[in-house]
Amino acid sequence: MSSLLTLSKTQLESLGAKDFQMSLDKMTLDAIKRFKSTRTLPDQFNQIIDSQIAKLNAEAARARKSNAKTSGGASGKSEGKKAAKPSKSGADDGYIPFPERFKAWWNGTSASADSRKDRPSRAAKKKDPVARRREITQSSPQAPTEEWIRRIRDRVWGEGFTLPGGGSVILNMAKISQMQAEDVAADILPGGIGPAKALMGRYPNMVTCFEVEPLEAKRLEDESEGVVRGQVFNYQNPDFGIRAFDRMFCRENMCFVPNREMFLRNAAGALRGGGRFVFNDIVLFPRDDEHEDVTEWRKAEPEKPVLWSVEEYQDKLGKCRLDLKNTANITKSYVAMVESEWRKVATTLASDPLPPEGVDALMAEGQLWQTRIAALKSGQVGIVRFSTVLKTIRQLSGP
Image 1 (cartoon, helix red, strand yellow):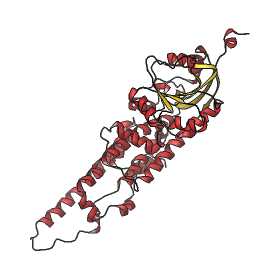
Image 2 (tube, helix red, strand yellow; image 1 turned 180 degrees about the horizontal axis):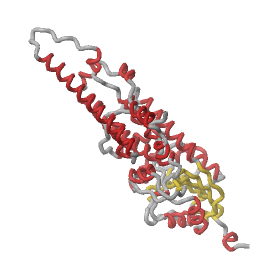
Image 3 (tube, one colour; image 1 turned 180 degrees about the vertical axis):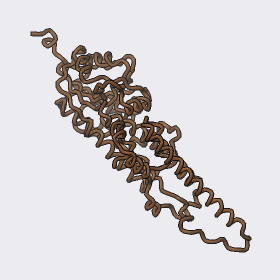
Image 4 (cartoon, one colour; image 1 turned 45 degrees about the vertical axis):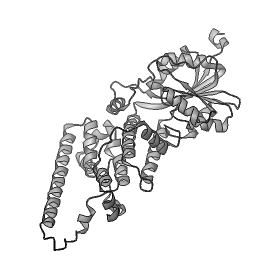
């Protein structure tokens, strides 16, 4: 049975009470609370959840009371007597390593008790009890630093990348655009040096990267040792230059640009004759009512998205001198890429652990991607690739 966290509203409502309860039984208390706070459920399911939370709270209270009695009894013994050796279950102390708990959190299930065999030694626990206590008790991330967010994105998507697919995505876009070795290219809002490096590994010319923050644009130039040109992107008045590029690329970011029609006009103005603009974006597949998972995703995004349908894009592109050659719905492969990369991260945490601030960033980034994937799985939004060509003067003037 799929995790409740990944099911759409329709799929949830089709579950019977027994199946719903069985799914809850596999979830931790924190996962259940998080699930309840982010979903609107039928009254019957809310009652089942409330009952499960009360049950788990009672079990936790009994466990604390039992531990308190054990501690009190041990402290009452005379100092001359050797304290009784704790039982195996007491020595375990309920510890489940963070890698296992992260996998459980991502999947919305309970961490396996079998994972306790990987717990740190008693000596390691004594050596750093504060760090261990924070790891066990931490259930939600603190506000992570930009530096740690960047490190986590490097770890999840590959160094210099902020979106799934690594260099293969930008290279595929270049192939679709029929890019040639002599073409001058621009990458809009890449978030890192990775895509530009991938392009320059195949095509020798300098790549211009447009970023919102001046410091980020400068950082990309510095990291590339001058072979990438960093330019500042102004959300309100995007300026890409005039007839500056043969090829332009942008990944799933245009839905966050407030003045998108100006964006498209200026992008067209920056293309040379026969130039091509290939981009991916999150689009809306219209329905009467917005899906709950889409609403939750909108709330979670730092920059609030404004979604266009494919038909709206086709109309706007035509008005901006961009001829839409083809589109491709790549949602299914996109979701598969995201889930695959996060599973890989979960398997590396045991051998390559994170400090507390890294855990905060990992959880924050993970929560954001959970909402994105849930929205994409709802079927109301999707990732679509658009391939466009700048219209010639003859095409504009007609036959």
